[in-house]
Length: 238
Image 1 (cartoon, rainbow, N blue to C red):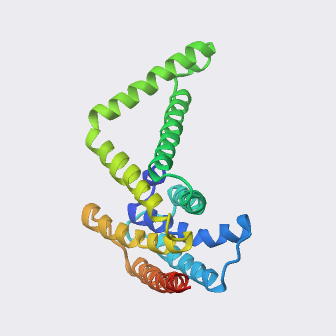
Image 2: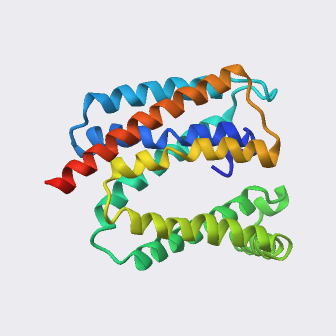
């Protein structure tokens, strides 16, 4: 998602990420053998069409690009996270599960930074001995991390603590009592909030095509949320 935002707009990225809730039923059936109602497929197809309308909107002057593909890949990863969280959230302690998640993210991010330092090394370092290459890359990676912390601490706290760790913890608690399908219906509000904040904070605007796509997505969300709420009510009554 972060890499995708280097190439595409925040509005397009958040709308492509919305597809995570539509990939949940797809993965549920084809990877986990769970039966999915035909209405879920209809909803997914409609949402996909709405997303294409928004992604194809070029009012921002930015044509579809690799950032859109990276955002879609992030949506697929998010869908798998929702499905696996449904299994483990009810049998583990929320804080412990969230702590492990954040630890894995931190380790993988450090490895990614180290790999980036290796790739961006000067040619003479790349052709030097492995010890020199690793020492140089480690030094560069540490300098980048220290520089980021020194220069962007408020941003790191907001993105790392509030929008990542805290929200993941809340998600873990929430999915202890609701299914992945219901949770995905609630998460479907993401693109609407994303478009609103992108407009207010970044002055990103959509054309008529993009607004039509948002209308389609809002309709799909309303239908999906009503259906999920009805299903949860039946389970409670039973």
